Amino acid sequence: MSVETVVGREFIINFDGSRCIHSRNCVLDRPDVFVPNVKGEWIHPDRANSDAMAQLAHNCPSGAIRYVRVDGTAGETAPIVNAVRVRESGPLAFHAPLKIDGVEEGFRATLCRCGQSKKKPFCDGSHTAAGFAATGEPETQESQLLEARNGDLNIKSSRNGPLLVSGNLEVVSGTGRTTNRVTKTALCRCGHSANKPYCDGSHSGVGFIG
Image 1 (cartoon, one colour):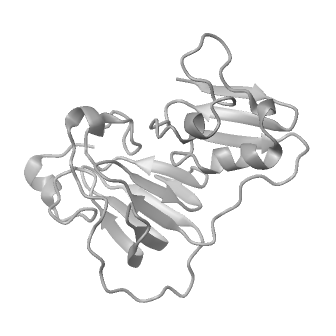
Image 2 (spheres, rainbow, N blue to C red; image 1 turned 45 degrees about the vertical axis):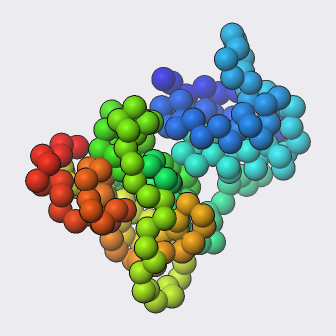
């Protein structure tokens, strides 16, 4: 699916359907702005004020919704704290200045951890059909406070292996609990690790390809 662009009085909205994981934050928060299951135009940025429209985009975990302000003023900025949220039986939701496999990908992305996505490393919702089950509440690990909590985050999809992450990052549970603080880690993307969300080498035994 190509990126849909809708130009409003204050915002240009870019919607990338290939990134959408149907978290439904947009259609639940403002069903007048994002109107699903209709023919023709379904995004109406002029129905919300500028602050509300920006917040709708910021609440999109996958980065499918991005915006540019028509007047040229600054848009979304990097978070103060880089985080990856472990979604219950779902993807890894990153919020940081992201470079994924060498490409700058904005500040938000949801990456596959079930191993079934057709759009690796991005989530495409395949975890639902696959019946993937994994906790969103990993055990808290002892970790030291990071000297810095922000900055660039680099993510590399290793060949047939885990996501290799470098940069300041806090691993956060689905209920908002910080479970770990790292500057380098390997996160499972085959779906078989016994130590999710971290890699334990299971990808080799199951013949993961990706």
